[in-house]
Every structure is written in structure tokens, then in C-alpha cells.
Length: 153
Image (cartoon, rainbow, N blue to C red):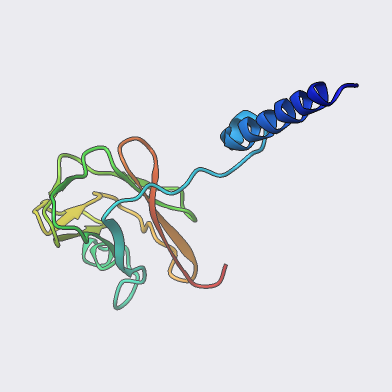
């Protein structure tokens, strides 16, 4: 094989490697997990065990809550976002709620009147497991935004 043919073969091989390296993982057949969606909205404080006796009253139900907060400066509309419990598989879907910059909202389990500071799931049973659970927040495109765990896994 002549020197020029060998050089051409090496050049083509190098180009093929460069193109393969530049392809995304999905195109090469490798499986990767999707990156979490970057958002200034996060899960804040959690009160999974309502204070006092767990007697199923509306007061006790509203004693368990999860805070969702906007850590950014710009407002975010939470319409269509969801907050889910891993242990009970119960999901709360936000209505048309706008969180201004540096604002937070408490998501209570029981019944109540929604305000800009507190929203209610209107449930008759507890949502969060006191001992061990995970709260998962997803945006309106079902992208994972944040999770918060408590207890042993």
C-alpha cells in the first residue's frame, strides 16, 4: 500500500472517531439518565408529622405540609406542576398559582381556602409518611425539578 493511501486511511479513521465522539450518547446506543431540570423552584421545609394526635381531623391533616419556594428573582407560574408522595403515591396538581421571586407556598393536606401563602389538597387522609417518604416536584412538562427525602431509605 502506498504512503498516500495509508495517510488517507488514517485520516478517514481519525475523522470517523471524531464524529463518533461528538455524537450524543443516545445516538451511540448508550443509555444515560436525563439531567434534572434546572429551576429556581425547590422543595423547602416539610412537616410530615402533624403536631399532636393524628386523629384525622382537618386541623390535624393541615398540620402536615410541604413548602415549595421560588429561590429566584423572577416569578414562576406553577400551573400544572405536581407534588407527589413516593410512599402513598398521592399527587397534588397546582392550579394557576404564581410564585413571585423569593416567595414560598405551603401545600397543606386537608381542606381550606387557597391563598398566595397556603394551598390545600382537600384530602380526607394523610399524604406524607411520618417515618420515611420522598416528596417529588415536577413541572408542567413532567420534568423532575426537585426531591426531598426524610427518614431512612
